[in-house]
Amino acid sequence: MSSLSKSARFPLFILMLNLFIALLGQGMVIPILPEYLKLFNASGAAAGYLIAAFGAAQFIFSPIGGQLSDKWGRKSMIISGMFLTVLSDLIFAVSTTLPLLYIARFIGGIGIGIMVPSNMAYVADITTHETRAKGMGYLGASMNLGMVLGPGLGGSSAGFGIRGPYFFAGGLGLIATI
Image (cartoon, rainbow, N blue to C red):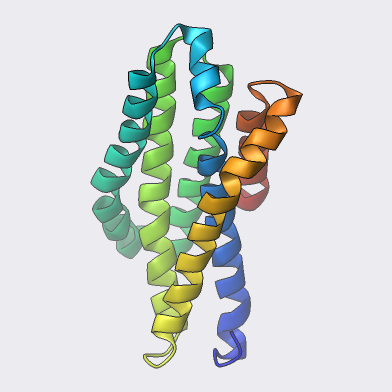
């Protein structure tokens, strides 16, 4: 981040931290999902559909998130996206039916879908043409790090109960939202 201007470093760090936390939370659910689904008498196919629900929502809402970011501002969409990921994690943690799990994952996909384009647009706003690719690279690295570390953290926090990682992810997201 040394070649980035001083005025861009702190906002970029905050953006990276928020995306890291959001994707860490999403990655935390992966290792315990098969065991969690046993509570619902669901098969492995349900795990695939849950992951697909998240991906489909993110795919659908990313262009919408970009438009909303241009209309209502980057910060409001980033905070809204973070809030939706928190809501998703908490619904997933307290769900007692399989359809609620699908709704929770879809909400999480919406959250990431409106958050990522807003973060990217914010990076474009605070960087110069010469440092934009570097800023986007840092953003991408933070997202990937969250997805890589999330499963390990999810597996280890499952020692506090099968629903523990979902509450933990929701708590981290809430801190990042605030």
